[in-house]
Image (cartoon, one colour):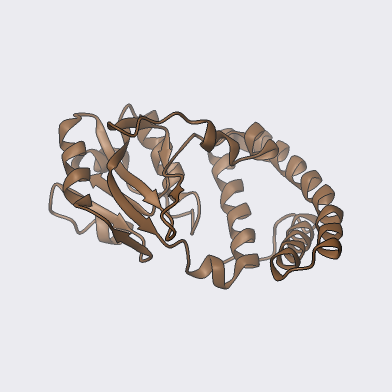
Length: 232
């Protein structure tokens, strides 16, 4: 995305996944939101799954505590106004409008992140710099959530963990990463026998895939996250 952003000469740019579909005049709504707020740097629409159920679009800033307890719960606890534009900590990066002049002051995405957490890091840097990230609920986009993650789910999970550790190393330092590593390793250790038991009681391909993911992640942690088992 950075290579494309660096070539943009227009006031606004759009960073889009290949697995999305616009349901209305998304580009106009996002650009208008950015133009109306003198501090707005990123704007993101309301996301829907293919079955028209709502997907989390705006997300809270990650914290070590919630990563260890249940990282999805804070998303459901966020109270968003679906009738007007809101300032949010972070967004899902499937569709993002960028105010180029302001984004250049912050800097573009950190290329050390690959496949996960790059937009989360960008949103944090934008907010820390005194700028704003907007959620624009009037703009509607379908997000298929397919691609590499579904074709290679185990490798995707390893990559997710790797990017998560990079994020917390950058923003919380080594102590934060150590706490997260120990906590997630213990959580995986407890999850494996429970997942195996569930697979024995209610067999399914999804349950088997979950056991495989847990085992690979547990071994990867045991090897101190050194093997390149993700997408990098």
